[in-house]
Image (cartoon, rainbow, N blue to C red):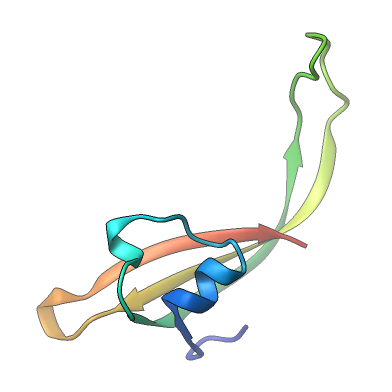
Length: 81
């Protein structure tokens, strides 16, 4: 995905990048404004209450923009590589 690419709500939902919210209802087209690739550290607790070992994963964050003039709307989503 590059800056300037167009994506639709249907494509985002199909790939699990957005939930079923009012902002994503209908046939809205989004334009990719920014793409950031970086690493992040994930740690947590497993089902038995013990601390998990931290792991580093690659993450891609995108900022999407839709609308015209003063009614532009921005949203963000991400996925792990």
